[in-house]
Amino acid sequence: MIEVRNIIKRFGEQEVLKGISAEFKQGKMNLIIGKSGSGKTVLIKCIVGLMIPSEGEILYDGRDFTKMSVKEKKELRTEIGMLFQGNALFDSLTVEENIRFPLDMFTKKSMEEKTDRVNEVLNRVNLQGANLKYPSQLSGGMQKRTGLARAIVMNPKYLFCDEPNSGLDPKTSIVIDELINEITEENNITTIMNTHDMNSVIGSGDNILFLHQGERWWEGNNISLFESTNEELDSFIFASEFLKEAKTARLIKNQNK
View 1 (tube, rainbow, N blue to C red):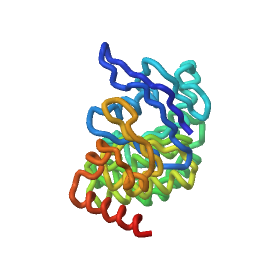
View 2 (view 1 turned 90 degrees about the vertical axis):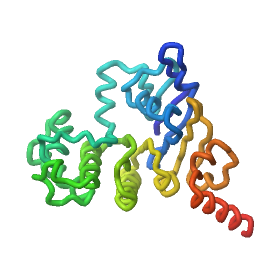
View 3 (view 1 turned 30 degrees about the horizontal axis):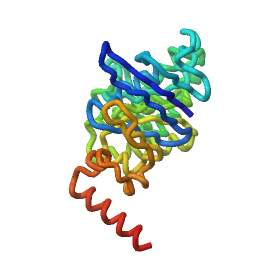
View 4 (view 1 turned 60 degrees about the vertical axis):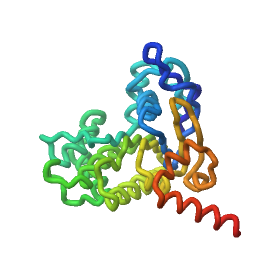
């Protein structure tokens, strides 16, 4: 579990995060949602250490990240997997070399052990046999799966996904969501996803944090979304007529039970 307590982040006189407190549960899909400029990206960057919060605490299973030494932070980062919005694959490296990169950097495993692990995660993301391909030879969905394979190759306890469905078609987005969800459950990972994709929110939001103007405005799951009376949340989630109708139908169904 990851817990943030009263996180405040200022840039000069501007306060971007205004005392955010939340728990991100182990083995669950924890989603951070909100309009552009709501503070989602800043919050994630604070949690993973890319930014230092002005105030507050960030606890990884009780360990306060904000008080760790440089060495302790480096050790913790070996427990973290990152799936970036743009995949961040090295164009000059093959799929196998891209996925093996964290193992080369942070472990002393033999080449045979590393190759076995690479093949294991390639199989898990349904990319068997893609070892020698280069990123330019892959579709957007295959690139995303390669990024996911690299993110989990170190068997992380914590997985961060930044807009994992950005640039993908709806069908491929569902495949990526299902993969992340399955891997989270199988390995009991604390997964935190920053997303604008409403299919992700409604389909796999075990624990959802909605930010509005730097504040925690609502927290719940993909079921309680349909029962919320929060106007800001409603206008964000149910912006389309289709989703408005879906919410109305759900409410009517619940009233008739």
